Image (cartoon, rainbow, N blue to C red; front, side):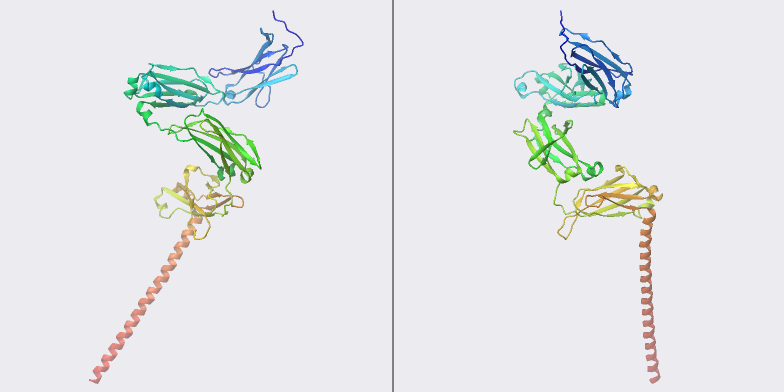
Length: 490
């Protein structure tokens, strides 16, 4: 017999109830209130804009548990389109003078990170049955398919795959094993772990054999580097993204934390740090990024530090980051050149060139506009910034940007603008525009100059020839006169 004292009060524990099966339309969501006293409780539901939801609302009466407390639940129906968009829904339970709320939101689908591990050296040396392990981590939802191939053919012999296990972030991990004999291993049999995750369209395989184990690159020391934000990203978002990259890890599980801090005098102010998903690299190591976002003014003035904790590190690794100061700011000069007159007659492509030179520091961006509309990046190519050769004791840089278009687009006469962003500019932006008609003026001036030079040269040549002819005539006349005088004397 259970005795309930009216004076006792216990607030509910509130849990979301979400179906693990495929989405239905409508989608049924629920929430569960447990271990509360007294039994009076009221449920309510709201969407992301805080509008009440009553569609399909059902609230079930509290049920007395053996512990002497009560349990109750409530459910609603929502459109599957809203659920699949990952719109949040909120269930609230009011009990006595306490109201608790829980969020229900579809989890983001994430593909697995796959690694394959060879048998242990102790097992190989001991002539024991060997196991190759295939580890899939960090995926959601939990439905996943793992198959094993032996020399390219599917096999179920010696295969054991555990049930997915939920991690602390709500992601899932799963391990699959294949047991093989020492003879199969020594014959260099190729085993492949093939993983499919339909919810994310992921399909990948990892191979393992004796020779692959021998060729495995032993990871060198763990590396931590900080990456400053680009001027382009700061200009566009008016904020600075700080990146801390931890690489060369044998596995991602041994990484304990990545944290960003702002240095303010002697104090370290913790920044909100976002940890990215582990990336599996070609050298069979993992890398992870930790990022924090600060205001552009903070980036220009303050200093920052990234701290990394990892089982391979004897102590916390600290790597500083700040904006490079002391650069002699130099404003870029921008020159835009039209397509070459020998390229246009081919009627295929037209190349417009933008030369940006004489700037410092080297962090700069160049974009193109066509009739004041931004051009897609696949239509132009920017060179890397290159240090200029200068006789003066100052360091400056230059780069080229080439915009390639159809020749008929150039002939239509639209405008093309080279947009340059650099911190030394008054508004951090400048631009130069060219079109078919302004370019034609450049060619006309050049042709007129050549014509003028040819006229001058022709005149000089004619005068020179006339001078020679005149000199030859006078000389011939004098010689003829002298001969005549000699004849008369005789």
